[in-house]
Amino acid sequence: MNNHPVYTDNDPQTELSTLNLGPTHPATHGVFQNVLQLDGERIVSGVSTIGYIHRAFEKIAEHRPFYQITPLTDRLNYCSSPINNMGWHMTVEKLLGITTPKRVDYLRIIVMELARISDHIICNGVLGVDTGAISGFMYLMIYREHIYEIYEEVCGSRLTTNIGRIGGFERNFNAIAFRKLRQFVKDFPAVLKEFEALFNRNRIFIDRTKDVAAVTAEQALSYSWSGPLLRAAGVDYDVRAMNPYCSYDEFDFEVPVGTNGDVFNRFLVRNEEMWQSLRLIEQALAKLEKEPTDIFHADVPDFYLPPKEEVYNNMEALIYHFKIVMGEVPTPTTEVYHSVEGANGELGFYLVNDGGRSPYRLHFRRPSFINYQMYAPMSRGMLLSDAIINMSSLNVIAGELDA
Amino acid sequence: MGKITNEELLNKINDKFPGQLTVIGEPFGLLTLETGREQIIDILTYLKNDPTLQFIFLTDITAIHYPEAEKQIVVIYHLHSLVNNVRIRLKVFLNIDDVHIPTATVLWDGANWMERETYDFFGVLFDGHPDLRRILNVDDMMVFPMRKEHPLEDPNRVDKKDYFFGR
Image (cartoon, rainbow over all chains, first blue to last red; front, side):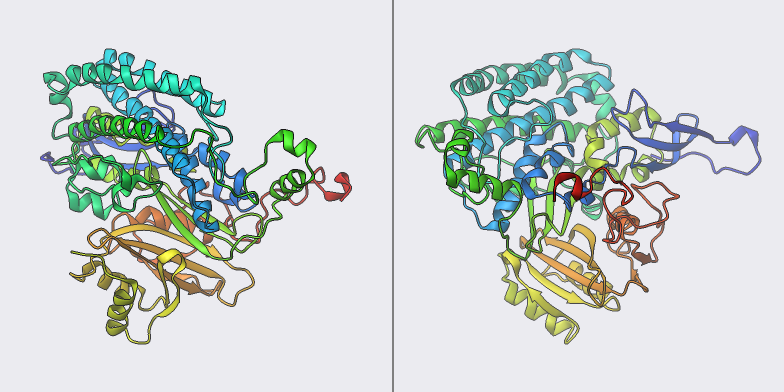
């Protein structure tokens, strides 16, 4: 790949040019700065600078009760915030020893898989745009909108969802949510098929992506990659399958893996994951038929806010409401690590609790942060245009990168 | 290969490094061990390269500050054996005046940014790290902000004092 001449000093013919790619560059889809040394169009070396939107979430989390940390997790990977929310709820539930009813698990799986689809829609759609094919992006984007409409029915908001509560959901899924969900499951396969037909055997797309930024399994593991990127390199590590949470073990789904970890493999793995997510949603919908329709949270009055009408009319509910809001409920002094399969990989929460109202220490294992550190080393010897595509296919989300 | 239990895992490590590890506990089934900085790299190397253990996946490196403790800074490693599907947590306690610890970048390339983040927020000095600079905070920051002595908000602010709220 890298077969250019050796450089001599002070020779104007072989002098390198420096390019500041970012922090705000239209091709990088986020706040990423890379200072690149270029020899013509080839990258000789690069340095990534991150932290432009660092918001000190881990520090803020040390001063907030558990339920107020959920909105912080929204703003990590904001393309699939429900997964972050659910991951956080499940971490706290693990800490407190709460078991959720099966119906809650199935509803959570529906929401998380919708989020995964919407995240992969963005990544693969934008990868198409970066290689010059805008139409595929347009076909898919309307379905992200439909997913957001389902979120809206479930929790009232769209991007930073703050969806669910510790123990379940703040309200039951209504009939409109189920109708929209069924419509989505019915319509989306045809569109995804069309999208795949546009790209999977497209000569131009394959020429641009095949063997670009190929990564071996050893390299990927050494850089602690996870998620679709690691699976594209051929390692079948998926938290949902390896350490099932939220009743994933009852579901039938496949973990797609690639062969050589290049951009094309990552694209195919993400597409296949969308199909698997659809399968999971369909199975969850089928399983929900057998569950009682009125259960949407676990019975944990110490941590789950009582309904508002009871707070205004009922002494006990009012007491619980105050205890929860003021964080007066004792919690166990221990530490817990819980991880979920985020859209970009293993999203981990390391929570150290001292029994107080807020965590003593909370650390987010953010897949984008860990995946992105290979970007500068792997760009060496690459064409600038390939490096742009490589960044798109890494799907680094600035919020998750910088926390 | 099947799963190995925490007990087998602990026995194996204790056989290899007798007396150099202390068990902290098994919160939620995750074996947590304490060790010193002198042998941490040897232990990590063993865990990674032993053919039956194969903790090849470095999940995370982070730190905690306990201002009341004798050894205030704790560096925490989370490893995951993808073959056996077992996780392990290692802790190294450091004095606040002497926060040196050898780098794990010799074993995993991915440790680079994790250690930079830990340095950035806690000031832990990873000896031998190829590029130990701040990563998320600005380069000219003077403090290590995740240490507990730094309040979240400006202590000189008066508009959030309790007496304004009748407390």
